[in-house]
Image 1: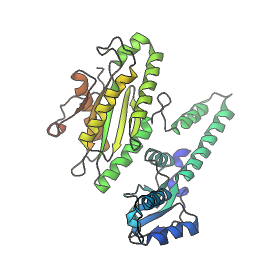
Image 2: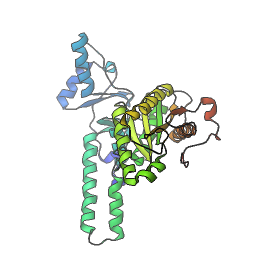
Image 3: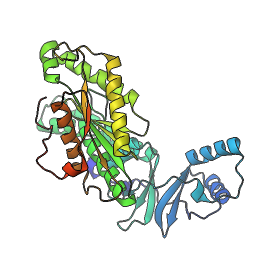
Image 4: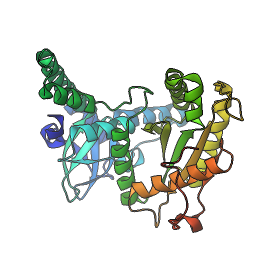
Length: 343
């Protein structure tokens, strides 16, 4: 059922919009008069930014700190570029975008980019809850039958989740939605972002020695550490098995490499024992790749594939390190990949 719910059925078509050169005081007064939490900034009806209560609060901080003088234009405080969705975006995809990027307002645009409406995180959460309750009731009513319909209902219920049950990180499906949106925004606005693909070193040996229950607990501890270590703008997902993917918006290749190296060195403080490892503790290896502003990759899969090659190189060169594939080797399809290898 949830796959049939699209943003156009949830959005509010009564939206306050403004141009970037509008007087800020007038726009704020319009928000107050209409009890709206945001204003979409448009140019030829195409969203180019957004002003929310958060931007107003930041402005108040600037007044207090520096005594900023009015009049001001909206463009001086708006958040840009603005994340948008289309009317055909599914409820799940919109939830992933709003959750991953920590935004509460999503302008809805037409196929040609013009503003059509607005959907808020509250709208999405309410719709998600209704669908979840519907699926739960379906399961409860069918529990005594144990039919194929019950199995299908349970499958649909699980598919509503954005989170991996074991680690508490985003799950694979949410990761793919986030990457698709992040990459399209990078292409559209000529922005950079980076990814880091982590893999637990010699995890099979760990499971064989300590047992799978201990392995699950180790993955939880590593995930908790990573969540505490990353920046607020970064997003973590369980890529599969013991592999974890980190998305780093607005981050250059070498900036991402520094963050990855810092993350690996910090894991030593967690000190999860691994007597079968030469390090004596659980460690991570990492591959890092970046989407550059100009002449970047057309698809996010290419970027993750490059990070996978870097991960393989880290494993092959002693583990517990981060690696980037040099630009001159990026086009060489013979560079080995980690996927499918147990190192």
